[in-house]
Amino acid sequence: MAGENWTTVSEFVLLSFSALQPKFQALLFFLFLAIELITLMGNALIILVTTVGSGLHSPMYFFLRNLSLLEIGFNLVIVPKMLGTLLVHDTNISFLNCALQMYFFFFLGASECFLLATMAYDRYVAICDPLRYPIIMSHKACVQLAAASWLSGLPVATVQTTWLFSFPFCGSNQVNHFFCDSPPVLKLVCADTALFEIYAIVGTILVVMAPCLLILGSYVRIGCTIIRMPSAEGKRKAFSTCSSHLLVVSLFYGSASLTYFRPKSNNSPESKKLLSLSYTVVTPMLNPIIYSLRNREVKTALHHIFYRGLGSWKF
Image (cartoon, rainbow, N blue to C red):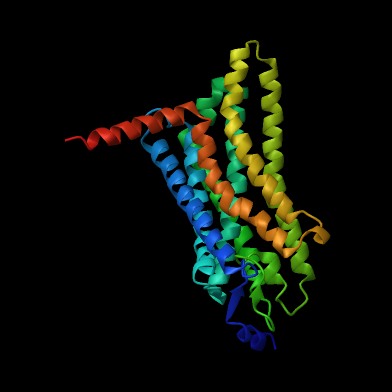
């Protein structure tokens, strides 16, 4: 029976924003297209600047480059298909492509959680143990921490996606979302999913809250160290190196928590779509803006690259 039900659904239909009038869908398309271009160019610039900038080879910028790579991947997994549903109403997505989209969504999302925790640890060592910072955060250690952050998403994505798509699907194939997220796809399963739901809740709490607690612990120690600093200038400099990361963490965890940890009574499909837009579309666009506008070294490197580029065009 399970094998027969497996074959009853060969593709899904993403309802996306189909409830809106065509003119509003067209407006959303141009809005999201603009955001997509800004996101890709902004994160690509961060990668370029932190790679070629002479003063941006510290561990902090190494992790920032990894964050931008994650944001580009995360964005490309979600947004192109969403633009297709708005422009040409290409709402069909194959069974395999839906599974792949969900897999990379979980993989990149979990990896970003742990990378943000790694960046908080980097700031903790830099401020609380500056004399040993070059030893603790050596190039080898940074590569290992970055690799661990990326790999942390693999077991989460593999187990959850494989388990969910091993269930039989029958009846409706309409996913009430703009991408293949776990909760709306789970509603289409015609089997007992109680054990999977328990696993999904526990897994989400561990993946989201464990890095969050590490970040919180790091910043409690950082805050205590900054308070004990004798000079106001030292306090200002120490805080300025953390402010961008704190803002990015607040945006990411705030929107993700509102999406996945709200009571079901307040979690209508339409409100979930709006909240999902915040961390799948808006936050990846804001991160490079936050780091470029609030970081003097990044702004200086951007100016040097810009004027160098202008100089190369002179005849």
